[in-house]
Length: 254
Image (cartoon, rainbow, N blue to C red; front, side, top):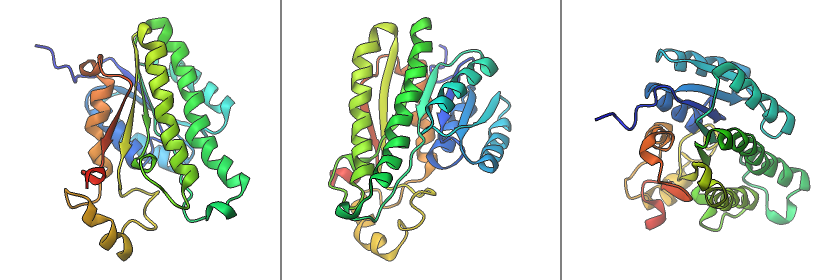
């Protein structure tokens, strides 16, 4: 029996794929045999990530892309197709956070910055992907959401709103494009040690107030998301769509 998790011959894009959860997803995909295109703004991180991905023996490319720039996304998708020939799975993972500003002091600029990356960037990335996937009648769309969309998130309302909003987006895409063989799902991480959380997640306040609420007793690590990426890019998930898959160590259940 053929291994349903073998990604040989498949091509995946991972936005924000040069560090954290995105890089772990890209590594999992590459190890499973996929050709991987990572999009990221930081050229040095892109180069380092590309070196890691290339070590697995498959094809990998890194493109400098700011997903909050519509034309940059359009050009990057076209460039990925030119380099790798086709795209089977797109992981809209690039995201930014901005925690600490009271809502009544938040500027329109800060609000729009978070929405520009976390919502508009996903819109443009998926729009270009759907155009391609419709033509081949197959594809997997995956967005990185967050458990922040499930509870009140003071001083981070803009971040939480985007992470809840992308879930509504994937449900609509699952319904609208299922007839074309396109599936759409979200992955909702809990508290994960990444560059975005380095400034506060391991502070004493979080260690004493938040960590005890995680039943498995530890913070998440980027590598915890490699397996779900492989599953959602693989033929094992062709009947799985319109879902949000929460990976939080049980945090929301306590």
